[in-house]
Length: 132
Image (cartoon, rainbow, N blue to C red; front, side):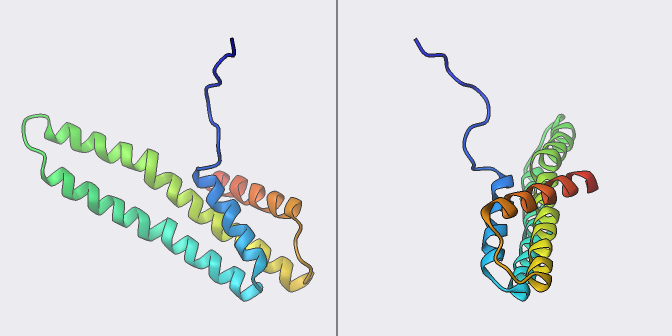
């Protein structure tokens, strides 16, 4: 009988967004790579958290009862730690990865290999984690 594997499997996470957009930026020129990074940063660092907070505020307004204030505070903390914080982390990582691809294309003007792109996105994720 096989044992079940528990834990993370698959690549449907926010980290894969950084990898995918780094690959897209590598196909474009330096200006396109910077534009991709700036648009990704704007979406993940600003637009998505603003939309999530608006949704949270509208649902907090519907709460009533003696425990409404406690649940509203809990909802804010959960939204920040599980959704908004990681989205902002991805925004910074996207900007770093696409900027690194653009700088590479300006100075070296060679196409990046898959291993180089993987290393670039890994370093961008690491630096974004350290900046957080």
